[in-house]
Length: 231
Image (cartoon, rainbow, N blue to C red; front, side, top):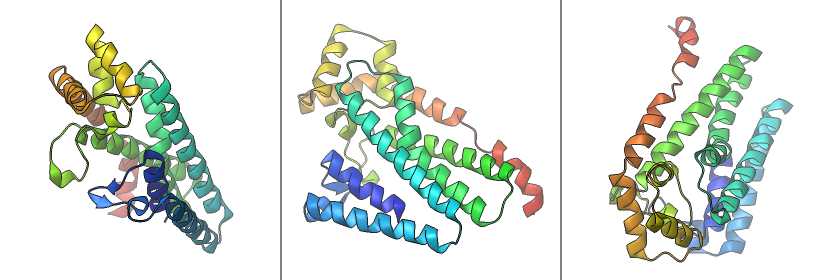
C-alpha cells in the first residue's frame, strides 16, 4: 500500500502520464483525484501497520514516508543546482528508494520477533538492495527497449542526472556538455540534445561504471548468518 501511494504521488510531482508503460492515475484522471487516491492508500498502509499491534511498525512506516518525501525534495533541489554530484545522487536514492526497501526488511524482522541485532542487519540488507535496484533502474533510462516500460531519456527530460550521466560528464568535462547540463536542468533541452546526452553517456563509460557500482554493493554477507538457522 505504502509503495503504491508513493508511486501515485511521484507521478504527480513528475507530471508523468505513464508508469512503466501503463497510464498513471493522474494521467487517467487529474492531479486532484490522484492526490486523494494516494492519500487514501497511504492511510490504508498506516491502518495495516496499526493492525499488527506493534506501534514500532507504525513508526517504521512513518519514518519511511518522511525519508521518501525528503528524497523527493532533494531531487527537486538538485534540478536547479548547477553541479551534478555523485554524493547528492546517492543521498537522493537512499531516501527515495532504499528507505522503502529497508522499511520492508525491518518490518518483516520486527513482525517475526527478531533480535535487535538481526533487525538492524536486515534493515541494512534492505537498504543495499534498494540502492542496487535504483541504480539498475536508472541504467534502463539509457536502453531503448519498449518492454522495459520506461521511455528512453525520460530522466534527462525531467532535468534529472542519474549515476551513468553523472560519471560520464564529471570524468569527461567539455564546454558542450556544460552547456547541455545547463539546458537539461532548465528543461529546455531538445529531443536531439537529450539523445546527444544519452550517446555521450554510453560512449564515455557511464553505463559500465553504474553497473560496476551496483555489483560492488554486496548484500549477501548480511544474510549469511541466517542460512544455518533456516536450512
